[in-house]
Amino acid sequence: MSLNYSRTSYTIVSRKNNQFTDFNVKINDKTITRTTCVKYLGVFIDDKLTWSNHIAYLKNKLYRGVGLFHRIRQYLSDSALKSFYFSFVYGHLQFAIGAWGGVGITTLNQLNVLHNKIITAMTYSSFKTMITPLYKQLNLLKLDDIHSLELGKIMHKFHSGNLPDNFNHLFTPVKQVHCYATRSATRGAYFWQMA
Image (cartoon, rainbow, N blue to C red):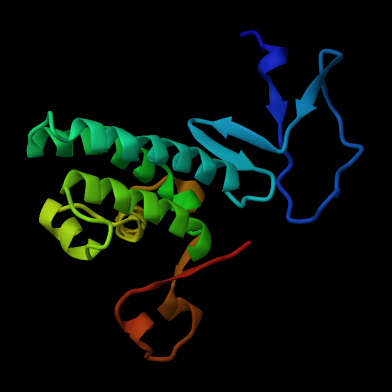
């Protein structure tokens, strides 16, 4: 196995600025470049975990999608347009949303606006139209609902023991954290062990 040094980089994830300024990585006397953002498996991960680069990437994809949906909607049937939505929009929004979907509401609002514009383009609606009925009409999920669904899938896999063992220490049943009969404890909720 060989390593392409020109395409190899590393990132130090830290909330503090300039914590590792004199840190160098060398492999076979070749210095590896330090970057503030790296693309790994299609997700842009920055050194502060703000996900700003990934959100900007998604905004660019959705921005191009708005114009594209306005141009192609007259040539496609409703089912073909929906299939195009799932291949061009939904896949990008869904991918790794469990990681980046928890950013602030203000940051996600930029994606919501573009996502809503695509939905209004698909339904030939005015930008003043209430958006929730359009999602229901198309039987599609809003961005927050996509995030909740993906987190629900992860928790279901955890609860049924289908996640790798590395995840076992992340969640603890609430009834093991305290002995009070709270709603969270009685319905089988989990407590997230933050690092």
